[in-house]
Length: 182
Image (cartoon, rainbow, N blue to C red):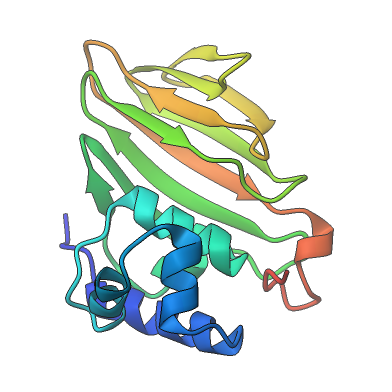
C-alpha cells in the first residue's frame, strides 16, 4: 500500500481554507487542533490521523474526499485503512472508498451533513457497522445503508475485513458539477 501523500492533503487543505477566507488560527481553533499542527499539515509535513482529517473536513463543510482527492494512497491508523476510489460528478454527489479493518479494530465516525447516506458492502470478513443505535452484523457479500448524519461505526472482532463504502451527499450540498458546497 502506498504511503499517504501528505503534500496533496496539505495543498487541498490550504486551498479550501483560503477559499472559505479562514485564517490558520480560526480553522485550527474550530477543529480543536494546534495552529502549529495545522501549519505542518498544510506544508505536507504533518502526519494527521483520519479523525483529524474528518474534523477538518467538517469544519470546512466539505466531504473527507475533498481533502484527500488526488492522493493515490490509503490513510489510516489503529488498524483502519481508508482509500478514496472515486468522486462522483453528479447531483447528488457520490464518493466511493475502499476500507480495511484489522482484527479487533473500531472506526467511529462523527455525523456528516444532514441527509448524507452511507452504504457498506463487505468484501471479506465479518463486521458490525451502522448507526450506534442500530448496528448491523455483516459478512462477505452483505450490504447495509444508514443515516450518516448520526454517529456511526465499523468494527471487527477476530478477523480482518475489507469493504466498499459509498457516501451519498444530499442534493442541497451539491452544485450542478457534483461539487459539494456549504
